[in-house]
Length: 108
Image (cartoon, rainbow, N blue to C red):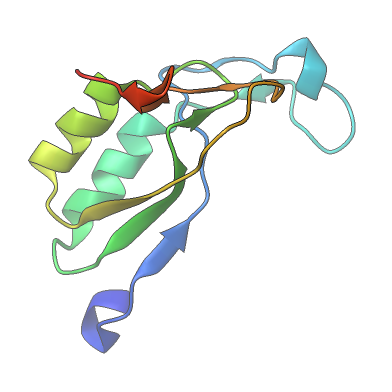
């Protein structure tokens, strides 16, 4: 539907390379005990219809440790319909930003 109507999809998703236990700091509440792998599912979504523009929100913001510059670069090379918004993460945040590391753009 997004491709047909020519509207982007704003996707909020953490990068998870493979199914893994939910980190302790996120355990409890409404969070599941295990996190499903998300990168493969994102690849399938992007391949489903190359005319559908997917905007991955908060690119580089990595609370789980699986979003790397290489992963993002590979996805964007393989899927020209993938876009990112960048999120600048401050020094005190409980996560890193894999794209904007140490005041510079991270290389693959």
